[in-house]
Image 1 (tube, one colour):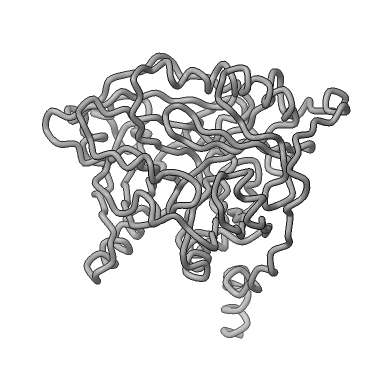
Image 2: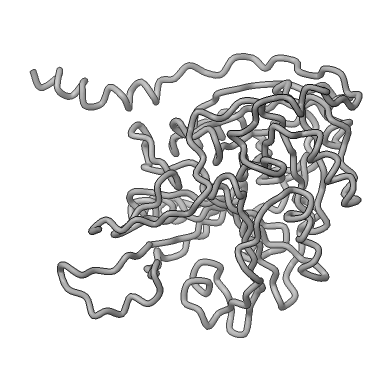
Length: 395
């Protein structure tokens, strides 16, 4: 009886952990000539909202040198392979500008298919290790954020790995108020809505983990029951960039249709959260600006523009290198978006198939980030939430 109960309790976990390996990639090279379907204006794209119908950030594309190790690592966090593909050397050169054949693996956490996925890139002839293990705030650094159900356990896991000789830099989980100050007065019945956050910096990937207390945000962070470490899809993305002017980020609004969350703000080491998470030294500060899709509050972009000089590895934050080197969006109105990006003088590639056979184009923004815009004709299964809704648990 006890063995039967054990099997029933752990069956979802066992089924998840014993998933068969991904199939061999399929050659999705296809035609590299630009093409736009006349039917694009006739499709029912009401699910995507008005305007250009841009999604939140769909995927973080991560270059890896050891596929099996990467699948094992992200598998611990609840990600599984849902698609594989391949580009030959010529097609990869045309789409990504890299003269190397490419295998792609799309990873999804639970049922979250509208945002927060991971794409692993395995290059036959990689350009190098990328930004790599670096001081927090290095120009070119990218950080992927996820919700967790036990931040202290995660802290201990990464700290133990660091103590064992692995290259992880781990911050202390810090408590922050969600609705402003949380000094009180509070009682057992009147309590604060807070988060605990910590950052983890590694050789191939950087994470921001957070746990919620006393509130929830529907659709923003979904933790699958079979996840070993109790972690969600990617909910938002931090990008450390160097620009001459904040105007260099305005194409995200004018060409892609994203929404800026208010004006840029100056933050620095006088704030306990940034000082801890980004390990700011006395006197250090940055300009902070966020953008989100009008059609999905999830998949936010958070830009950090340091005021003081920082080490700059932005030239290694590009396809062909290791680490987080690109981000993707999708839209049912690919032709319209290609025209808008072209009009903004951002020099997109022609529309052509990516490694999964999806019509797309690629371009690099003036701040140094590489974007791939994918055509998606039908709505994702996982519901996209266009409006931010914070719900207190004691309401």
